[in-house]
Image 1 (tube, rainbow, N blue to C red):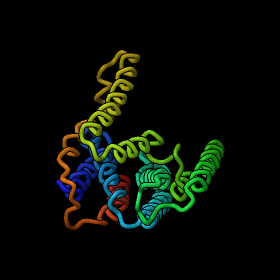
Image 2 (tube, helix red, strand yellow; image 1 turned 90 degrees about the horizontal axis):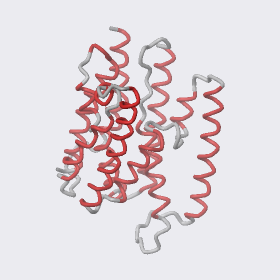
Image 3 (cartoon, rainbow, N blue to C red; image 1 turned 135 degrees about the horizontal axis):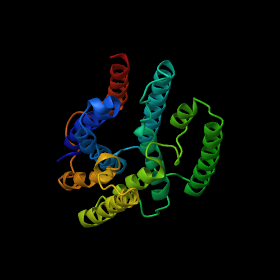
Length: 264
């Protein structure tokens, strides 16, 4: 499968997941189960994009702008529907922005890398990134404790490792998929271990509650392991069409589903 084909599969699964998210008890739970496959597939495609893009600065800028647009639109809708049972908290674009930034900085330290878009001073870039992250996380914590309603907008405009969608654990997953992308055995082992940790974390909570159904009814992120076979079908090709569909479909479908759920 090409990255284009994988993106279409992920797009469909993402739509199912968000129908289940915004329509809650009215939607079957299996929509959320299938949705667990979506984000890993998008992150896998992101990993291929980081490698194959002609310009990482432009790639990063595109993701950041999309994250900002998503954040602004979602903030406005959340303010209009302040009593919505399920507010919009989705913005995987902010997480992707951080993954690309970290991968770009890290690989700029590689003297054997012949890419022309390497950072000229990766040491300075790393120092600025770490410093900015510390300040952004601190500012976000202060805003949250003060009850500032626009903290999500702040996090979309200036993504940080703690308050991006999925937090730093999803950033770790994205980096894992990037750095293990060239070896299917290592990719399978690394991704399998990540899902294994997710499962045992959920199992521990289920045992503590004395209810194994918790694994399937509440904490089912471990089901993302089912996306691995699709990753292994990747043929190294980009495919045709649909290059930027995710950038507009992602925010629009969330906003539409949110409106339908609150206006219906």
